[in-house]
Amino acid sequence: MLGLLYWIISTAAQIYIFIIFLQVLMSWLIALDIVKAGNDAAIRLMAFLKKATDPVYKPVQKYVPPIGGLDLTPLVVIIGIQLVVGLMFGILF
Image (tube, rainbow, N blue to C red; front, side):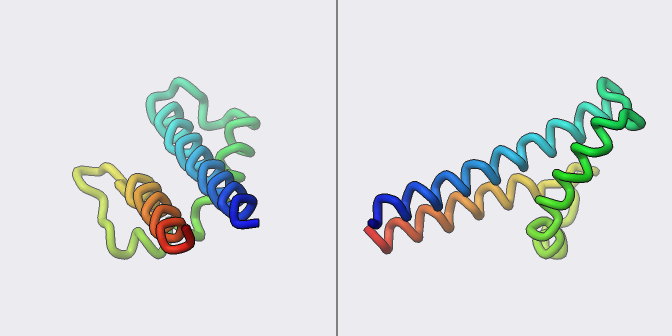
């Protein structure tokens, strides 16, 4: 039973980290004008990714200001997810 719980939480964390990576990649591609910001598919994808990441990003952004115009929030969130999952499994197993 704990193995199934481990798998579910680990998979959910990995999917969320993938969403974060995809959001960062898309924002870079749009900023570098590789993907046009007016592209309908890009607009829909970015809207979905923003809805998925903003609930976690917003509280973190209060404490992590941009450094040199670079938003480190995704990095902090990924490290936080990894720490929480690692601590949780360290306690459970």
